[in-house]
Amino acid sequence: MEPGTEAIYNKNVAIAALVGILASLLLSFKEGVFSPVPLYGSLIFIVIMFVGHFLSNQLFLEQDPALFILCCFISQLGLIMLYRIRPESAVKQLAWFGIGFVLYFISSFASKSWIDKNIGSLIFFLATVALLASPLLFGVELYGSKSWLAFENFLFQPSELAKITFSLFLAESLKGFKIERPIVFFGQILVILSLLALARDLGGAMLFYFTALIIIFAATSRWDLTGFGLIGAVLAGFLGYRFFGHVRVRAKAWLNPWEDVPGKGYQIVQSLFAMAEGGFFGTGLGLGHPDYIPAVTTDFIFSAFFEEFGFLGASALIVLYFLFVYRGIKISLTIDNSFLSLSALSITVFFGIQIFTIIGGVIKLIPMTGVTLPFMSYGGSSMVMSFISLGILNGIKMRASGGESDE
Amino acid sequence: MFELLSRTLRYVFILLIYYFLYNFLKIMIADLRREKSQPKETGFVLQDEDGKNFPLFEINTIGRAEDADIIIDDPFISSKHALIYKRGSKLLIQDLHSTNGTFLNDKRVTKPLRLRENDEITLGTKKFVFLRGEAVGARDGSNLQ
Image (cartoon, rainbow over all chains, first blue to last red; front, side):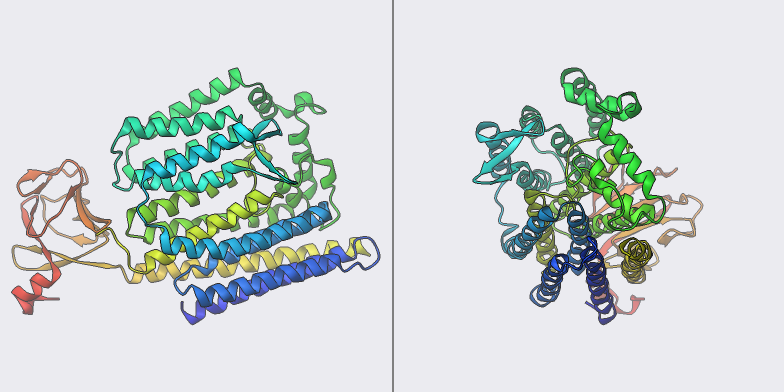
């Protein structure tokens, strides 16, 4: 890394820390008297961020430091919003962030050492199926979809982990830049999608479907398959509308939320009100009314952020996500090895589509689907798995910089 | 008191977030500049009949146009005639719907084809040979440009 660039990265870490300290000081005074809890939280976060930044620069010479800084900054904005909405969630989320941070290092190391151990697409496929089938067998139903495993007192969503195995499965199957056994390959994808549909996790199914479509196009450059895929998506949408009650509810709430404001359109309407309230500069941290929005810590955290940081803050957040996706695609483009390149791309595409789906949903651009906003929404499995994916992406980058290529 | 603080600080937050973004954009632009100023050489060259060498980079457009990477002024060559690009460790040639066609070893190129050493490429009336850079140096050391 060049000295100029390194200085800029360090400066950005400092800016992130400054935002955290200012926001936590502000939140300390929220109740009128000084309470130091947010400040402690913020200091813990900053220590983790600094340690992570400098340690990873020391350990991983070939890494991309931008990824970690961007994700920390986004997580921090998420933590600030969470603390402001529900302090006890923020404390838990900070713990998840810490766990995610440790796993980020582990997965960086692991993927650097073992990512190209030719495991074979069948193993990745079976792993994905096992992960997706486990909640169907042992899971509990929550928010209308049976995609959660319950341990003692925390919930885990195996489909988050399945995203990683599915990415590796796609990359492994398509590493020759062509589909070798089309019937088997499409059959395998169909099995995975139907498992998601069985769990009634339609947001997840959509995510997997579009990721597969994009990776197939990126690998084979075939317009015919992409065309069929898009037609298939439209057909699936119609079928979903006919046969799944909650798809119809979501679609109606999207087309005209004002029809049934206290009922089906309630979430979307509250989210739109919050954004309108925010205006350009926002109401100011702690002055909005996120408590009016349902599911504000998970699905609608973007609306809460929009209300208090305004259009300017929210669009900056979208640009932050864009930058993250840009770095991911750039990593994938600079890699010669086709398996590593496609894995990096599909991990990035998963993030990208997820971000688009949820932000598009809360601003009423597309129908609302219950996926989380990576690094920002409250939720242990999302936070931890996002950091693991990030570590794998970083590991792929390091592996590729070590001079691996096809032959 | 809290209200006033919060209302003032919101401008500070937005300023800081944008400063953070600005720094990243600066890095991004520096990256792009660096990539543009030093395209990666692949170690292969195209040699024309007069013995002139055109080094090949990761993506090369060949044609009459001013902005083609390899400019060949010949009336039988289209403005963007053909594309040679790197995929994995292989170099592929693709015809860009040129009027007179691109030929690889006298066969018309209709889909991207892999290039091998000493392949003969015909664009319009011009013939080129696809060579490894070191081979050229060994054959006629004086000709490296």
